[in-house]
Image (cartoon, chains in turn green, cyan):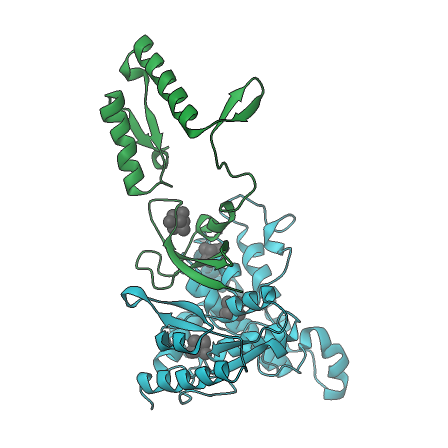
Length: 135
Length: 285
Ligand code: SF4
Ligand code: SF4
Ligand code: SF4
Ligand code: SF4
């Protein structure tokens, strides 16, 4: 049995409490608060305590799906990105750039959020960008 | 008093020997890793023990129990135990949560300073392998503990409600407590606690936990240390532990063969000729 405690940061909000993931034979099975973390100082909220649960969850989305009729079908990343680009372009052409905005997530990393605002500002050319923590 | 380094050296050689002699499949303790940060670690090779440290306090009884639950047959885990880790593991053995044969406890003494932080009256394990026992602290001398446990029912109730109101229902106290192992947990559903509602039912949530642990809490402080709201949870447990001590001359975690009086005193009491303890009446004032 290979069991280790891997130090990481809680992905659920901007606070960024330190946590240890318990990994047994390559699977994430538990979360413990990191008592050495200067942010959380050994504390987590209920989201942090449950952070390992989604990792191997059977309902987790692991590939893009497109809705056809009443059901979802699996498509490739290539197809998904082309489809999204095509739809966004269509909306922008019909209603103008301001018709598009984006809500990012506190669950993303700083870098992902940077790229997201860049997509909205440089790509869609507006400032309609916000995040879930303000909702 | 031995220096910290001497204690670490002694622990390393003792634990290395356990691995080399095949007395233990693995050692569970603390390691100093990248950037000088400490975290629990399972050591399987003697050389890995070079990164072993003994500080800071990091309650290991619950994770040790969980490791043993999923371990393959024949696995023996040596656990570096502070006094409260040992006492928690003793309680878990009593409740058939840990197989005593799969466990090797290596006892480490806490410093007097740690005892004052924990308000611990027994800062050492019964089987002390490393370090020297420091003097314990009487938790009831602490002004914070006095404030919450003294005064009439109305005053105490008001004070407790004020601190318990801060609870964010994170379940950190339940998750960290080495002895909180019930499945399903009474704090997770009707009729006592409604799921997904904050603030929680102050009295049922906290008093159910306090009473469920009344005869088994070892005052390790893990619940309180995990509480993001800074609620002095161990103070509730100190009161319960004192009641058990005064009413039944019983303390949790000291002896694997001693059964809890809450379940067994009706069998044991007649021969001991004990009256109903006074504290049972304290809520009447
Ligand atoms: S544990 Fe809670 S407060 Fe801490 S980062 Fe995660 S979601 Fe935020
Ligand atoms: S509660 Fe006692 S035994 Fe446990 S860490 Fe604190 S001082 Fe040590
Ligand atoms: S002090 Fe808290 S965490 Fe430790 S045994 Fe008692 S209730 Fe559980
Ligand atoms: S750890 Fe503190 S805040 Fe969290 S549920 Fe327990 S008492 Fe409430």
